[in-house]
Length: 524
Image 1: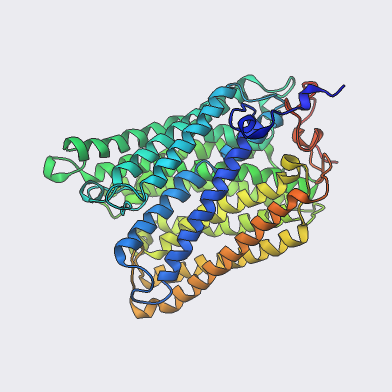
Image 2: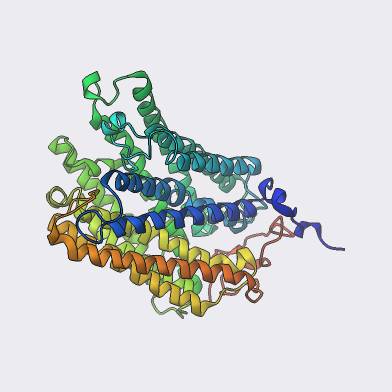
């Protein structure tokens, strides 16, 4: 007689009504990958416009709309929920020895709130008086004056915040209450640790942006003077409120990415993680200090010299725990039995690009240099090296690492490696010239530019085409993997709990709840 623990409800209804954390993770994966490709295509169209000076395929207002849509999709629909919603949902309970998250129905509700918010965001591009043109930051006072469909986009971000808060709350309680017998705090794998630190940011910081977005709507509808100087408001207040959330949001993006990288490196090096406790403490330190550095986004907006010095100092301090992680990753690889498989290639790319993003972040955190490169393409390059080169490549590493466990099949690694090479080359060609453009003085968010910036933009536009080609190669390889050979339970030789069960996992993960007697990375 077949064990009913291995049976899932069938059909579309079975998926849409399932409270199983693994199915919810897969539904998030499908949605986020679709939005990522849409956002990427919009970015490619923007680079097509910027391939030469002057108007190419659209006017300035259309460009501003595409620019805003690209930012809203990528930030609110892809980057912030990405790793936590997909791989956190799928693997957190398994990696701590639980059958599911502590609130399964709340988990499903979080997914549907995400879908509702995503639909509102998409509708904002077609309803009303045209796509919002404020950029994803919704800066006042322009967001109060624009006659485009700003309120619906703001409301979409507001709704998406509830999904983030509920997911974070679910993860915190799950980690506190459902760890397997014997799994003390310092026997827990490091990906759950990164999700734990991230979840606290989601719960504590997201309400701030929710209130801020409501204030925009209240000012537009009720004429309340929060940010409009003509009504007694202060537009700088909006920047403070926005970045008090949005800089911690960077760590909502990057902390799970760091957790993924810390899982992959010991597996493909067959080495125990170097400095386990230091990595744990650095994750908590990033989450804590990250609340205190928002002012470095506003060095040119107007604040006291003392405030500038303090925020600059804190920016350099928050780089320390990130550097600890990089040194620990390199130390883990030292003298390891390194196996250059596809997930490890994306991991190495992450470390390389994250280091470039981090070092250029210190340039922006330094008062003297920030004045010169603020609001130039240097900031665009830095941002994408952190967010796409960081979270994006960690996402690619994660999907290639856990694909056999999630779907029970092996993809074609040769094709996956080719896709990695094209993606990495395209990324570098797309974004590295932006550092040079920024140092030359090219301002960001501009529809057109002077002829002396042409060469850098041409290189960048070619890079966009190469990157999109690589992304389609990667997606094709992963989709084709559904017909690949059957995956063993532990194809990579990992030590954490997800590799001790079948591929794909059974309905309730474990036939018997495991008892933990040693740490998660005990390689010989």
